[in-house]
Image (tube, rainbow, N blue to C red; front, side, top):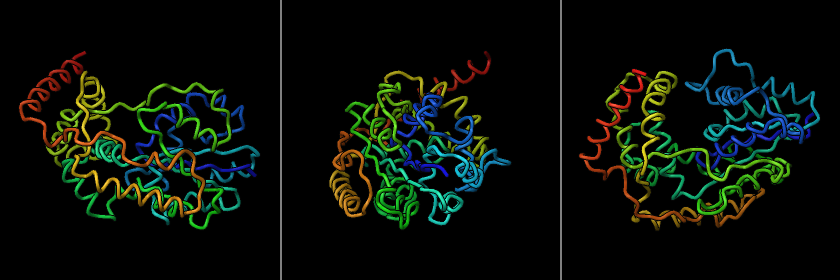
Length: 332
C-alpha cells in the first residue's frame, strides 16, 4: 500500500505549469525522494484527466487508467503523485472515477488558488486559446452575474475541495495559495514541496513562470479568428494542431512589447467582496492552508486596458503581420 496518494487537481492558471515543469523535469530526483508519478510523461496524466472529464478530453486506449494507478499504489510503499490542472473542473460524480478505485489508500487532494484579479484574465485567455469566442467584457460580466458559471467550477477552491474531497479529514485537504506575482515565484514551489514532502532547496526551480501570455491586441485577434473559423477545426486536436501550432505559438506569443490587459476598475469592489468571502469560507472549511489567505486579496493593478477596447487599426496591422509570418513559416 502506498504511503499516500496525492492528487493535485489544479486550479488552472495558479502556477500549475510552473510546478509541473519542476516535477517532470526532475523526476529522477523526485523518485529518489520517494515520490512516484504514473507514466513516463505528462501524457499519462492527461489520459487520467480525460478518463475523469470525458468528452473531448478522453483518450482512446490510454496506457494509464485510475484503476491501474490504484493497482500500482497497492504494490508500492512510496508516495504516488498525480498532477493535472483540468481535474479541477470535474463534477463530484466524475471525481469518484479517480478516488473510487483508491478507496483503500490514504488519498490527499491538493488545490492551488490564486487571487481573482489575476485568475480572471488568465482564465479567459486560456479559454480563447482553446477556441472560445466570447469577448472579454461579456464573459467577465457573465462570471460576475452567474454563480454557476464554469469559471467558478474550475477556480473556486471551496467548490473544488467539496467535489474532490467530500468528507475527507482536514489533514488530507491542502489548499496552497499562489504568492503575489511580484514576489519570489519559487515561493510557490516551496509551498508545494512542503505538501508532497521533499526538500525544495534540493531542486532547481525556475525564477519565472513557464507560461507566456498574449497581450490585449494579440488575444483579441485570436478571438476573432475563432469567430471566423465557425465550425471548422473543432476542439481538441484539429484546432490545437493548426491554430496553436501555426499562429498562437510561433507568431502571437513571440511578439515583443505585448500590452498587458486586465479587469477594469469598476470591478474593484466586487473583487474585494469575493476575496473576503473566499477567505472566510476557507478559514471555516477545515483544511490545511499552505501560504497566506491574504494572498487571495486583489493585488493586480486594476484599470488595465481590455481587449474589447483595442483599436481596429491595431487589429488590422497585427492581422497583416500575422498572416505574413504564417505564410513565411509555412514556406520554410
